[in-house]
Length: 253
Picture (cartoon, one colour):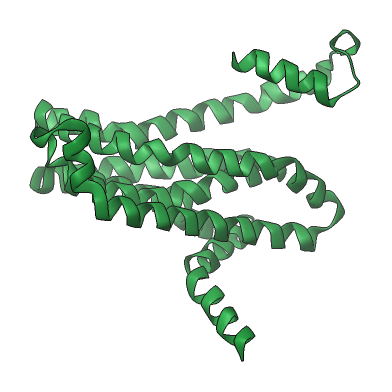
């Protein structure tokens, strides 16, 4: 169904027929040569997003995995939002990168601000209603998942901004940073799980996940001059509520 919708949209928005398509072998070789980076970074991403459940089963037991999995399922259900938002702006960002670098950076900052504010709004709402939602959807037997959810949901703040950083990587042709940051996230998640799960169980795994998300999608960007400007953009976004409040107060004077 998705393919049919895409085919319809293509046909309705372009005059170029599919029959007129041509292969570009040089571009194909270029994409294949870079593919191993994306493939390996995707493996690291799966590790640091899912290894916690494996380690919980290994270190605590299946019941704790069930408690954690319910919370993670509800927390990760929101991750489609930043992907949809960033995808809608991606073509415009590509054009701005080549035509107006100043406006390109301004739009990046605005998008980081928006994604951060949406993520915080989602996290606050979910934190407040976690208990009733868990009871309604899964029953009282999973009530322990509520405390896990109130921790895990805050990892979305970094996942939301990561969605834009991932597109920045493509625009700047800096795929190696995807591999490096995802790899750091995987290493920190495994190490933190070893430290936190024995004493704190599912809540410890949730905290390890949030910290590893923060390291992979935010902290690691400080390490290299190429990604440092994006780190500072994200930092500005962390203070965006105060920035916009200050601007609003200044505008009313």
